[in-house]
Amino acid sequence: MPPTLRPVSFGPARSALCAAVALMLGVLPAATARAAGPAAPPASAAPRTSAALPASVALPASVGLPASGEPQVSLPPDRSERSGQAEPGGESSRPAVAADGSAVSAALCNKHCDARDPATATSDRVPVTASLYGRSIALHLSDNDVMGWASIDNGQAGDQTWLDRSFDGGRTWASGSKLGTTAIPAGRTGWRSQMYNVDDWNSGGIGALRACGKAGDRAEIACTGWARVDWNAGSRSKAAATALMMNYDRASGKFAGWWTSATALTSLIDNIRISHMPSYRYAIATTYDKLRTAEGGDFTNSYLDDTGWWGLAWVAAYDLTGDRRYLDTARKDADHMAAYWTDKCGGGVQWATDKAYKNAITNELYIQLNAALHNRLPGDTTYLRRATTGWDWFRNSGMINSGNTVNDGLRDDCTNNGDTTWTYNQGVILAALAELNRATGDASLLTRARTLADASTTSAYLNPGGTLHEPYEPDGTGCTSDGDSFKGAYVRGLGLLNKALPDRPYSAYLDRQADTAYAKNRNSLDQYGPHWAGPRTVTGNGCQHSALDLMNAAEDS
Image 1 (tube, rainbow, N blue to C red):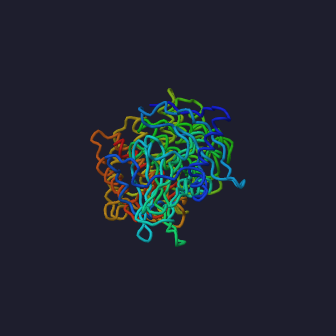
Image 2 (cartoon, rainbow, N blue to C red):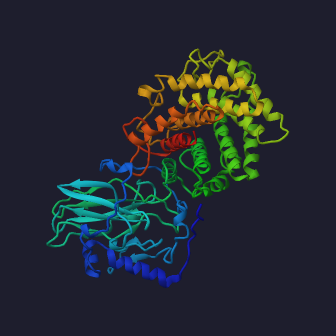
Image 3 (cartoon, helix red, strand yellow):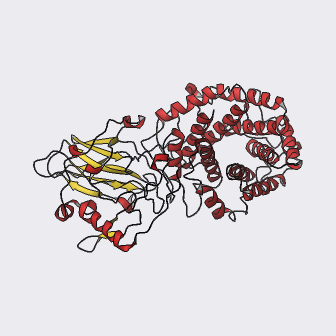
């Protein structure tokens, strides 16, 4: 894979030149820009290629829902032919200043500097459009140049068009508002802006652009959906991973939430392993270093299931990197959980340090984590004993109901509470049994796992119309509720079981789920919402990493 591109400094003279060029060619408001430099050529003059548009081009103009998070992440090219393309001009540029002394949006320089003439573009792809009072507004992307521009057609003199640029998945764009604002001149019906960079290689910003426009004699504005170039988006899973990283806050080392940051990180690590795209590998060490002393330290806290999610994330990190500190931390997490195995209901780990409730997810994670540690620690007996004892207790606890699905937990009298059969309770146990089979060689574990998987994949309750659906899929949480992450854990576990079975019996199911979500629940920025069968609504961390888990499992099946 290509190396990570690093910022290169060419001194203040080059930075000042870049800012000055940007000032002249489109960073200023339209009237000032036209006075400062040559007018943009008509929109129809932009170079066009015969490259086929991706499936996302059919999305309506209203697509482009905001995502949560404030990423500050590095973005090397994904394709090998693009390695080493950080040309001179890749330094951080200084903000331009208008003649009246007011600040305008800072010009970025990657391969090229902002405010480049679209006539020099090496390709022209139009992923999204919008319309307003008969005007056609389009976002143009030149993938090889990593730049885009806006156009407006079927208009009249005075109509305006511009770009907005966001570095958090379209949630905010204050630092990149109204870039290259320009207007249709007299005698024309169409015009275009200058080209602007999508990403910021200097700060590591993963960017997105949208094109906006307005009629000259009206106040209303229309904008396309957000979209970006095809870098780090060579497959469904890579594109979903890039969209997920728009939610990552490099300063804090977190996605959204505590345990959901662990599951998101695991999704990302799995994608690096499966897709061989190392671009976001830095997030592993960043998260570890930033959060190791948070909560109870070493990724423990009062909720034992939270600790289990983090322990499994660090097992995955160890598998990918070989860094022993991650495995050592996973051991501390497992030991923390083991300290809360109690005699109530005959055994099992309680939900939290101060909550005696025995539930399914905590104990499923406990089995998987301990079995995983045994499989990575030569000569171990302690973690194997914990895993086998955990499974023996779990299978006899009554949480697996007569339909071979798993309810949430046990009542105070130690009987099945009949609570919701959340999808993650159906999936984590599959991963746990696959890991325990690897530890023991006991084929009956895979047989039992297959029985459970058959029940959940064919359940009309969990798969209405054939598509996986969480019993509770809200739209008002911004994809940051616990339940928004559940389906991801399910398909991750199902995928791990599928790989452990020689006939790969669940590949078709995973492919069908992935095809449905890709077609019905994805916007122009490869962001996903809570409903895999549609409609597409909100986006955010939980929904995005769940979709990434799905694309990972389908590609790895």
